[in-house]
Each structure stands twice: as structure tokens, then as C-alpha cells.
Length: 277
Length: 277
Image (cartoon, rainbow over all chains, first blue to last red; front, side):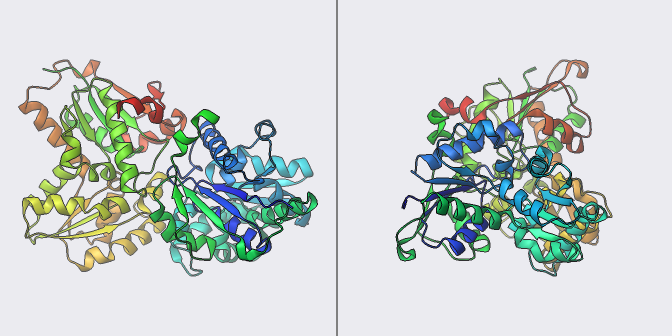
């Protein structure tokens, strides 16, 4: 038994979709969440900047005595090389490996699609993870940079014309390549699952990396005797953000599926962790 | 005569539309441009964060011995109070005052529209500037948060269906209020001037704050004997960015109207200016 919290971070709000999945299947666990709202988005930045931010975020969560770290951000996960993770002395997972595992086991045709931010697609991280499992798979990637702002502006209803047109534009190449499995490689995309599914003519299995990652965390904690022994009644989430909490508080429920209030703290991520990196 | 450069900064690329206007009417001037690409966008952040970033950007430009500072970012301009500018001992202008002056002098009906980022509209800065000129004017504001990502993803052709639909959604309230003058209160918006003009049924004069600001700079430098005495052949622009230069270099031409290369330098804005703030 290990009653320390699970640490989760994201460039902003999107990682809350991973927290939502964790809460569903591991209701007893305490969670510390860091949303880097002062430096969001990561997905349009350079690899070196994303790596620096990611290592700072990990250092912050480590300072909160977490038992495991979940990198709930496709972009940050895409820069997490083995070399980097070997420097971190507690269990850590990104969202890429669990999603790649699931896609590889589900695909019948061997052609897997991946959509994500520009940085995630440019990194080729999903392709590398899938090819490490099975080098014969064909992986088709497409960046969809407008999906994040569309979701963050609430344009998520199934009949939203603007989001549907945007999805049609981005997904054309994915449809043309006849993928049978499509990884929604950014935490925001599951919120427009229905739109993506419709534009794909329901012809591909959509993989939500947040859901797959939550399952991986559950199996890791179980296998290593690290589940929280206390009941769900005492379980809590503590939120930290790097911009003022008000914007986070008002939008978080879209991603988390429940209201949050009173437990959001602002930190100065640049200066807090400088000495630790 | 004053041969020192003009300092211009923006949260990212948008301020290059102001540089373009400056180059058109003041071809002899040297320019130092800082694009805070490592922390873009400002428009969705809290006022306190925007103020901190803005003061850091100003401190950086001052370290480059500029003769005047142009805050070429609607959002950063919106936090520039008299109290803040009084701390800066060189001439400085945002984009709001020149645009408000122009709108106030052009409006016949007295109903002026303002569109901009969420932070700019929330600040009410354009309304305050217009009311200081004439308190009887009615100012109708609307934030258009999707315009920046649409422009940055190149969705700027006049017949772009997605951008047109988005403009129709945002501008409905502006049209309903029958404004006769509309301030494009974000440096990105002039790039979709034609789309906005069409959706407005050509019924309002569109004000480009970048253009108005360039005119103000010209008149200020002229009046104070601060123009550059050298010819345009020796005039140069030096670019600084806070993320890696490659992304900036590849997109800058959309905003600047000319290619740039070889003179872009990356700086660490958080740590460079910490001691000076």
C-alpha cells in the first residue's frame, strides 16, 4: 500500500481528461495536478523548449512527494526519451506508450492513423512506439493545430459546423489512407470524439490515450502493491497552475466532468524549479 | 537626428504587421523586434501575467538602446496604464491610443465596434481610450479568440469557408449594433481584412491599429527631431525571439510581407531581465 498521491501534469487543461479517467477507475487515489497555464500551449513550440518545460514540471511534481508521474500531455510525452526518463527515480508514464500498445493490438489492417499537435506529429513519437511493437505496421500522421483552440472555445457540440468543417479538412488524408485504428494523440481530442467519428464514417476504432494511460497506471500500481489503502471518501485532488486560477477554474469542468473550486494554487514554475533542473 | 533603432515587441509574430507599416513610411529607420514566441499567446492569460511579461519585454528592448518603444500587441497595450508607462524613461506607445483617435475622428454615428483577444476586450482599454476623447460615443466590444489560431494556420484566403463562418459567428453582435467604424484590435486581424469587410457587408470603416500606430511614430519622431539621418540602404531590422528561430522564420513572411533570415537571435526572456524588473 502507498498512500502518496499520483502526480499528473499537462501544458494546461487537457490533462484533466486523464484525471477524469483515473478518478473513474481508481477512486481511492489522491492526485496532484499541475497545469502549466502560464506557458500553454506546448504543441506549437520547439523541441528544446518543450523538453525544458517538461523537466521543470516533473521536478515540481517530485517536490510534492508523488508515487508515480503521469505525463498527461501528448506533446510533453513526445519528448520523453529513455535517456530523460532514466534520470527520474520514480515510476513515470507518458500517454504515448499505452496508446501505441492498444492501437497495435486492435489494428487488423496494420494501418494506424495518429492525429495530434504539430510538435507531437513532427516528433514521430507514436510511429516509433508502434514500430517498436511491430515494425510492419504503417503509421499515417496528421497534425490538427486548430482542434485545441476549437475545443478550448467550447466548439464541441456534435453539430458544430466550424469544427466539423475543420475536421473534414484535417482528416481527409487519414481517410484516404484507409486506417482502421486512429489514435486521438492530444488530450483535447476526445472531447470532439463524436465529430471525428462521424467525419471518419465510423470506419476506424478511435483510441483515447488518456483512457489507455489510466488503465496502465492501474495495472502498474496493482502489480507493485502501490494502490492507496484508504477509502475514496478521503481521496482528494490538489490543483496547481502557473497562471491565475480563475481561468482554469471556469473551464476545467469541460475536461474534468466535475466542478472544482477552492483547491487551486498558483505557482511560479520558472523560478520554483530552476535550481532543481 | 537620432540614429538609434526603434524597439518593437509583440507576444509573437503579429507585431510584424506593425513593422511592415513602419518600414513602408519610415524606410530609413533601424528596428529591433522582439517576438515572445516562447510565451505566446498573451491574449488568453491573466492581467497580472500579461503585465509581468510586458514589463520584461520593455526592459529587454531598453537594454538594446532603442530611442522609442512600440508595444505592437493589442493585449500588452491593454495593460499599459499611465502608472506603468511613467516608470519608463523613453517614449513609448501602444497600439490602442492611435487607433482610438482614428476611430473617434472617423465615426459619424458615434457607435464604434472593437474586436480583439479575450484579454483586450475584457480590459475595456479601447472603450476607455475612446471615451476619454468623447464620452458620448457608444463602444461595442467582442472577443474573437479563434481568429489568431486561424490566421497563424494560414486560413486567410478570402474564400476560406472556416474563417468566414467563424467571422460570421463573432461579428453578428457587431453588425446588429450597427457600428459604422470597427477597430481590428489585434495585430493578426488585418490579415483577414477582406473576410471581415465582406461579413460586415462593407458597412463599417475598418481601422488597422498597426497602421495608425506607424503614423503616430512618424509624427512623434518628426516633431521631436528624432528621425534617422542615414539612408534606407543602411537600415536594418534585428529580430529576437524567446523560442527557437526556425518556427518564427518560416511564418514571419505572412505578417511582414518580406522574407527574413540570418538575423534572428534567441534569448531567455525570463532570466535575462529578471534583475531589471
